[in-house]
Length: 362
Image 1: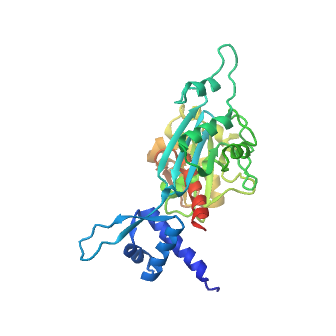
Image 2: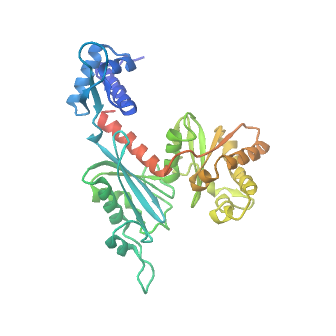
Image 3: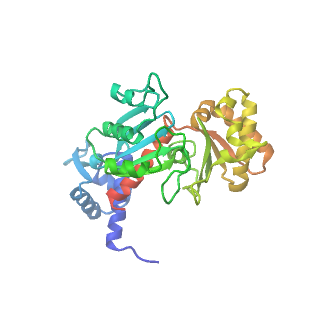
């Protein structure tokens, strides 16, 4: 076993302190000592080092009743870097900018049917002509404009976009977004060129799984499968606490399964869900989920997307009951509990993980 070098030990201690400042807000040096178990000289050096690096600053004194001078409070300089998360759908997109603590500092929304909050110039660029077919929007220009608006003068560190379709884990290119208005295969690279910042494209259900794991029904679970019930039907797999993409980005794509002679996604499509009983829907969901359970034994299936969240625990209970009749593998079924837009949350969380690693020095 190798012994950590002094430089490695300092990096570990620095990251521990920074993570505590993110989680708990401003802290005093005594509080940092108590929470980390580090010595007084080590914490003093740590605070000085992080201050010199422009990562923490003093924000006054703690209000204490003990005798003597109050301890100084230190906070993470959240403005040191900002990340952008984008939820890109076939009907439009939302871009959110967050600082290093994850606090939202700006948001912009665009709709491809020109009914969003974009100004008249934006709307005229994407609205259908009065006497002709609808024109596809300039998606790159629209994304760049919305991100710039949401950033409001801040320079993003990274942009993470969640979009429908399979995204290759190595090339970052999407292989299945042909019906996205204005879509281009080189969108990530071209948007990166326009904005001058790194752009990462990810499957939107994978990002929703990140949010579910950190903020929702799968928190505390190392293994789970997310079944996405929204405009489309899809899935995502988390094993050993890590999102699994597969060799070509297809891990979790449950919609392609053949169930009762049809693709699984067609058996529970939005128009189908609206026309059948909850019991029938649960039976159909269970047939698709059974395949994932048989292969992966995740222990937990989360019903996500707008339909999964809206149906809530009653549908989850029905699906669990159906699964129990099909498989001896014990599996819990829960409805998503992520508040708001799970894809957007997952995009921001992914951007924060990458930005913090780079800004904090690994």
